[in-house]
Length: 318
Image (cartoon, rainbow, N blue to C red):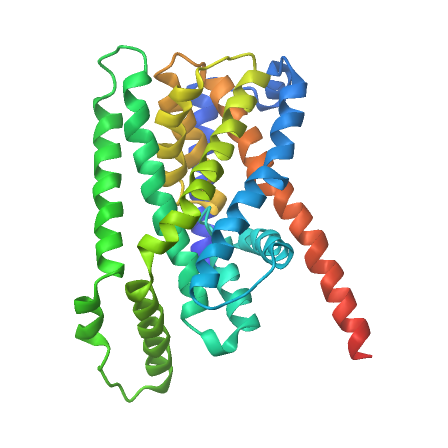
């Protein structure tokens, strides 16, 4: 609880800094919207295309671990988890709940079921890095991209390093036979060992051949939302340039510095889109709109599903 208050305080300080530094008028941000029909299109994407591509790739990974789930059930799990994940500071808080729900449905596949969420994120992170690297040449000619290219290089190296670590059978063998007398630690270690064993033995080549189209389409759908949001604010930034900037913001916001990444995400939007001469108030408005569309609206639908299922379960118990 104390850590949550600290993260909330950091988010508040960053937000106040942005408001004071760039003279932001938060109440006037909605007045900057020039074409609201683009926002309507953007809202539809996370609930339709993004959800379909996301649960389809997850279904592929699950089936390779002999776990069968329908797209409808995975869609419900994903939306419900996104709602529950709002309590976590990281933008990826829903993943923990996805692991919990899928393993509760398949207790005989502990470790294997949860590993599919981790594998999905690992591959997605690498794809984001590839998209960013391939799109960097499409940015306007400028000498201000040293920090951007450095960050992309570091993130890519870390992503590859984490991938090698989690898929290494040698590293798994180093601790798989460790014994501890503490029952709680032993239980945690057994689960971590099963999780690591599943990520190390997963058939990645077979998975990529089936899931790569879904993975790329999912990432493209996310960037499409950002593109439409900026169009709504009157900025027709070339699609390829969003490929170079937004994935970096998405990756950096995964670090749990503040509640939901608030403040940090807006700061990154201001900095990186400032490289394209986007005013700070527009960048902050686009960041808030994007977060609302990509996270809060799907989470609201997930909340409805969660409470509906809770009511239905309580009725069955009577």
